[in-house]
Image (cartoon, one colour):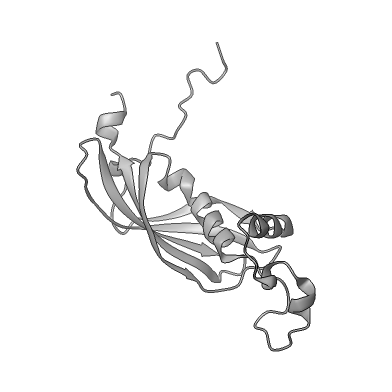
Length: 165
């Protein structure tokens, strides 16, 4: 028998019934964004904006908002969603929408992102075993500056149908 044979794969919450509008969740972990994160993913997705991978160009631009490479916003958004996933996506059956994305403060190599989530609303779906939950995710840096905002709508399992009582 495996040491994890009796250990549940997911947490006991995060089901449709566990979310209430107005609820605010502070997610447990932060993530320091490394140069490798930025350069690797920026190149993998073929983003050709030099501000993400050419330090020389950024250093030579005295009128720039930031005079060093900035982390690609898609990475920042993905990290915030990833940090929020343990609490908001473990029981997700499907992603419905991701919108109202705002990237408000540049993230630099070495910055650490933290995530918070507000539950905006919930409603029944056309599935008996799941409901729809709307979240607003926030990403802040180590200086408590808001860097990322996004609204996400997901189809979430109902505990009443998925958990054996």
